[in-house]
Image 1 (tube, rainbow, N blue to C red):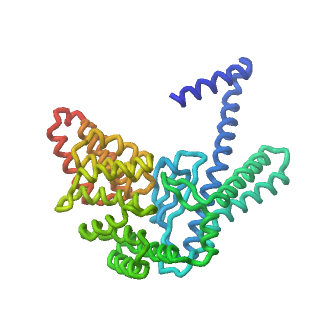
Image 2: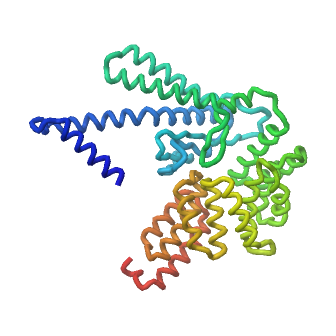
Image 3: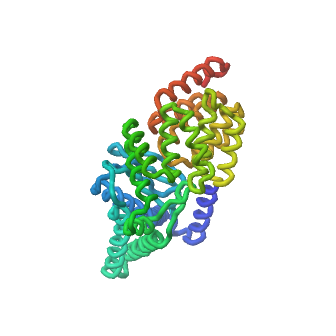
Length: 390
């Protein structure tokens, strides 16, 4: 409706502004307007894209592997994989971006070039835009270059001035804050995070035994860092050692920094089949953590999983819908896509269910999970009287 209203308003403005004798020139007018719109939209897009690509280049040059680059967060428009790396493009023109990378080896200091590269790219674009504006003054190109300089100056100042930015519903350190951290002497917390960052990279690559050893050593070296316990619990939970993970998560619940994440992880653990299953407590935990941080896509997904496990399927659907629309992480969005496929099948929309399953595979959801949902959908299709028509 908003697009139709915009088109109708634009048509009325053109009809009012252009005399009827010049209507044969409308094609040229619309072409010029479209060109101006594309040029204007390209300014913030290139500012964020080149900023994040600079981060990625610096990460590769300093011994990191890129996991994901996001432009125009927080609402994803589409995911695409290029050279084995995920790129996520959002639909929020004024949104931020980020580059997630992990180190190839255990680092002893925080990187400085990695967080500096993005602002440096904005600074170069700002200078080039300002010099170009002076060189081509009086032309449309000069106006575009001036806009490039202004937009990049805004991104540069905002990235360096604030200590945190909100990405996907979570506070994340901006480049300026990371640069200051890299210049300060390392404390116990920073040393622990360097090891956890390396362990996370090992887990991403499937080297779970090495990751578990690294986290175990980190726990012995930093016994007071609950962040280590929370990460270790996630590894144990993924390997089916639920009782050990349960004990660690219980100890993290009251921690001010990781308590909410621990509560969400514990809610998922309590949904698993076995002696620890406690759907009532899982319901309470998932509801409480989401109330503390409303709108966080990952917590909405966890709330949906808890409700679905409790057979409250209609309540769960709204949380899965919200999570699917906002999840930036490809693997998590792929999982939710499999659940959305099941909902579509229950509504006899088997064609749409198939699209969701194909997207889940593309986004990296576990093939075993996709096959399990596909079997359930085929069973629903056999039972549906309108299946042949669909």
